[in-house]
Amino acid sequence: MMRKSNFWGLLFVLPFIIGTAVFFVFPVLFSGYISFTDWDMFNPPKFVGLKNWINSFKDPAFWISFRNVLYFAAIFVPLQTIFALVIANMLNQKIKFKGGFRACYFLPNVTPWVAGAIVWKFLYGYDYGLINYILRSLGFEGSYWYDSDKWWVAIGSLALMNVWKGMGQTMVILLSAMQSVPKEIVEAATTEGAGKAAIFRKITVPMISPMVFLTMILSTISAFTAFDVFLTMFDVYSLPDRNNVVNLMVYREAFIYGKMGPASTLAWMLFIIILIITVIQRKFEKKWVHYEN
Image (cartoon, rainbow, N blue to C red):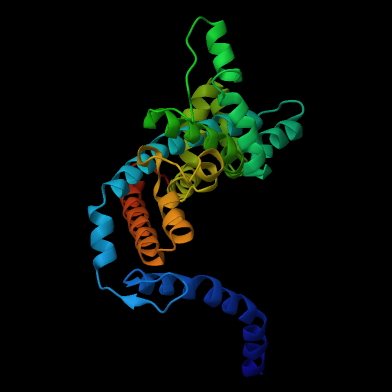
């Protein structure tokens, strides 16, 4: 009887196991092997040892692209977390049209990147962009944004765009966590005279800190693997090294130059960097994340 139930259980999960093996495990292992070869997708791979890894490590363009990703994450992760926390707290209050506000804030999350890029190119436009129009109306000079010669302006502009795109999902997770905070505790604090700001800072945030930590981990991974925002806003064929990021380097090496070995190496180097940063975040977890037990 037990063997028969095991058989049916395995049969039902078999499609998932096959899908994971074919579309995740095999590509990951294969890219690890390809990182030690020269392969153009048409001829058999040629083993070259650590050549791709050494060349990528010595390539200044890789470290510039890595600097840009770090800068992108340094803007994107804290801003998205703070905005999502504030908006989730507002939507957790008793306000009218709460469902409509939730839909509005989540709408960018389901908007295609191409449509989002059209909107943001209009906002960031130098001559007729809305942001420069407002700045000039206030007496300031307009600026080039995503197409600026200054790398920190270009990457920072795209980080803000990514905050707009991804904040809705983080907001939903945090709002769900806030609704699980016991109302008795909030009511007791209110009776004692605590204001909404104090309740948010001293009760709500500590009690949902595990979810805040989770969203920060997910946002960090999202920042380091961001691709669509750069592909839609930058011209990947003529992109200067100063504005490049690791994922665009992987794309360019693999699908424009046909160098699958260096592309796989860069992808693995990015994976190792994300792993190191995640481990560092875990080290600081106990300093500010509060668990019930």
